[in-house]
Image 1: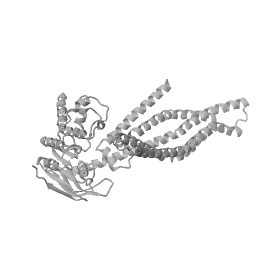
Image 2: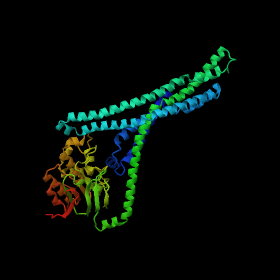
Image 3: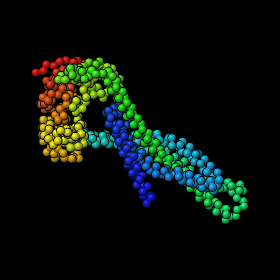
Length: 509
């Protein structure tokens, strides 16, 4: 019963430990767009998904089994140290404790080379798993291009790198296993070595053979138990290596995420100090809400300049079209406006909040998360508007109809039917973009930033969707190539070759 209870408590501790640790990491990960900054600005931080899922799970599992073995050890150590002192005097415990210290130092030296290799192995494990996820997500494109042999070769290459690292890790662990096994076997005869010293020095010459045999048996029993306590600690060396490796990876991730949050907080405080009360005053006066002042843009981790000394203002009701060749920096300007990238020089001021009721970004490929059709339309809201109740059905259906997806509810079994499929695999690229526009029509934000959000649609469909955005009174900042988009915008920012740009007013018909 005690053993079963111990196993149950150990697993319960594992589950609760994983829950608390993962929630803590999630709190950091989803704060202030850390999930984006981490992947773009901290490329050295490999596989954060693996660190928060697999590494946390393994660490908590190792800690639970580790703790169950360690918790009872101090009590047994104290008890058998006392018994050993009674049986052998001070010499027995001193020898055993000294032996444990020597074994611990040797094990520490043998563990040193194992931990870095374990960290490297976990990185390669994440890379190998990511490659399979990459193929699954892009399976259709790979199948169309008959890329099976190429992807097999690249996947096999990652596998072989992982296998080679695992073999190197096994070789380093071999010496650790040798050290622990030698400690175990020598510890087995330590009790007889301890009692042999007083016997051969003549301390027990006055005892008969029977009495001497009884003394040896008693001392051996107590000493073996004390040695066994230390042996169990030394045997945890391999588990301790795993714990150290996982702790390093998880701790490194947590530290970087906290640094990102602190940097963002500092930037927000600096922005508040600079703006003071001018933001509210400017909004009341109808002044520009997007201000780009002498900004130079470079990609993260690169010194290559995309746009140089850009000056731009966008006020409510003044739609802006951004055009230019591929790679000229159109999407980079949107990232600067959203605060996802830092400017090399200059300053960006956005005097309205981001979110469903402020500034809503609609990318070329909308993010379709898991959930029902209703949850896709109201995204990124968690729930429907509090005041709408079931009347929200009409609002959602109307938004889908305006986006040209009036038949989609019948295909999905209704607005609230739970679905198991991946939305991106079920919907065509054009339908995906229409679903993105349905979010605009449902949320009706004050400002809409559209990054080639209609590129997969025909020109007629594109003009229809933009007309509806205009009718709803949205101020739009759009990235696009078609000349027909000029009809819905008041200004056009053209990005030319190199880092040149030109801002001109459009003649709306």
